[in-house]
Image: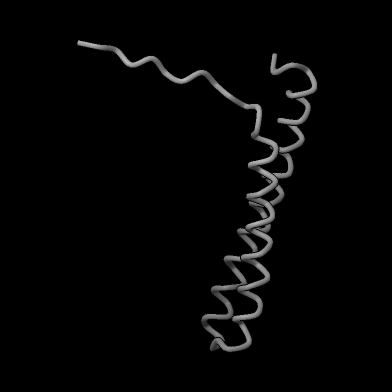
Length: 77
């Protein structure tokens, strides 16, 4: 029976990945706002609620970017 070794933790590009995720989420918010003009009131409320959750995710990702950037500066110790 062979045992697979876990891959080493590679955090070298986490900041860039998180920044891409933030940008993608912002684009999703903008696109959904555009679609709201063609939606009924119920769908508009759902879109608004989802955008609020997206905004919370963006804030969390920004905090994680700061943590990862600090870790990078400190040599990931």
